[in-house]
Structure formats: C-alpha cells, structure tokens
Length: 120
Image 1 (cartoon, rainbow, N blue to C red):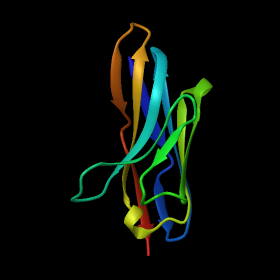
Image 2: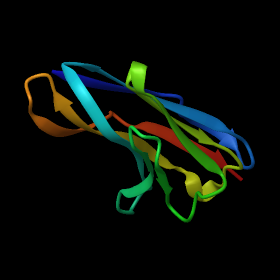
Image 3: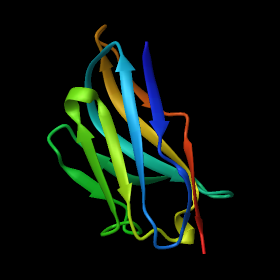
C-alpha cells in the first residue's frame, strides 16, 4: 500500500507565495518522476511541473520563472514553491508519482488535492 499526503494550499493575495508538499509513504521501492498537476473549475487537469530522481525538471509555460519543483529523494517528498501568484493560478493542485512498489508493481498514484486560491 502507498499513501500520498499533500499539504500547503490556502488563500493568498496576488503576488504572494505558497509552498506545497507531497509526501509518499508505504511499500515504495522507487519513485520516478513526481509531478504536480492542477485543475481549475470547468477546465481539464493540466501538468504544472515534474521532476525526475536525477533532478531534471519541466514546467508548464504558464508557470516558468515563478514556480519551482524540488524533491527530497530520501523522504519521498516533492515540493512546489509558488511565487508571484496570479488569480489564474487558482485551482486544486494534485501531486502525482510514478511508483514501483516493493512487490515489483508499477502504479501512478495521486494525492487528495489541495486548494490554492489567489485573490486579486
């Protein structure tokens, strides 16, 4: 069994910052990659950023230069530092991890989602 727990969402004014965390635990052999997605009301879920075990990253064009994804491999935890937030960043943010379990199976796991609301 694998658990994914997100934290760090909330309400912030435009221009402010938030830091999201996503901790994976359980029968984990390896995780690669970890990613953050978001879904705004009435819109499809979209990839925000991902990071590989080796530290390679990729960002959506809309967040480049403002968001930073990082990962603590020892803690199986990913972070999303969000700066210069805009009202259009308002969404539910989901953590995703591609995990190989100790039993040798591969799955994509999702966190429960955390609401980020940016007021203008």
